Image (cartoon, rainbow, N blue to C red; front, side):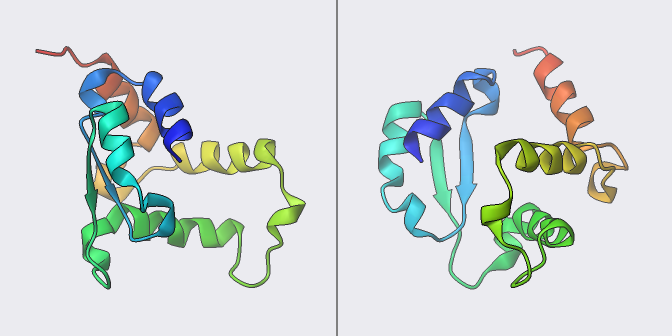
Length: 115
C-alpha cells in the first residue's frame, strides 16, 4: 500500500496530499509508515460509522453496478478493464458536486493557485 500511495502522491500537487481518510482494514495496519513517508496525515474511520466515509460508501454502491456482489469473478478482469470502469465513474456527474464530474472537480483543484 505504501508503494502505491507514494507513486500516486507523486502525481498530485502537494496541496492535495495533506490528509487521507481510510476505512478500517488490514491494508492500513501500518498507516504510520505512510504518514512518515509522505508527510500526509492519515485518519482512520471509526468502526461501524459509514457516515465518516460517505464518498467511499457511495462509490462502493456505484461499483456494484459494474461488479455485482457474489456474481462477479475478479479473475476475469485486468487492469485495463478496471481503468475503463474508473474512467466511466470519474466522468459521471454527481449531485454532491453540483452535477460536475469528479474529473472536472479534480481539474479545478489541479489548476487552482496555491497560496
